[in-house]
Length: 101
Ligand code: HEC
Image 1 (cartoon, rainbow, N blue to C red):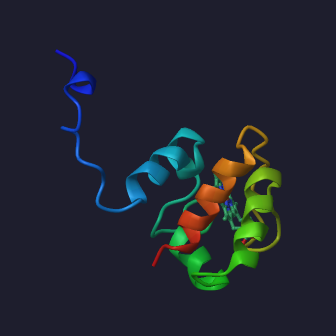
Image 2 (cartoon, rainbow, N blue to C red):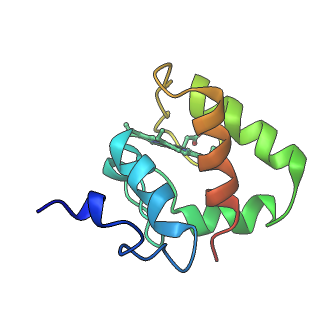
């Protein structure tokens, strides 16, 4: 029996988090980033604290970082470019990262 065919049984997530986390996991962001701890790259809550929660310019800047990479902002380790991430997905990820606390 397929759950997908039973219609409406699967509850929508209460918050947007899990879908975006799945996207970040799919693109391997989570191998270098954690939501709360510094790994290879800065934690997402540290990035949100630095650029502010609801800042459209920061979203644009992070879309560029996610697609093109970054170096020298947080330390000596550069972030590689992610040309496989579409602009729409990069925007979803940037908005999500900036909303973390
Ligand atoms: C190979 C490890 C690695 C991967 C994979 C990676 N990052 Fe990063 N990321 C870093 C490092 C290191 C930095 C800090 C770069 C710097 O100091 O400029 C960083 C910085 C960032 C920043 C902050 C940039 C800034 O200018 O302050 C964001 C946002 C970010 N990463 C998001 C992502 C997202 C989203 C993904 C997945 C598409 C991802 N990263 C994948 C290592 C990684």
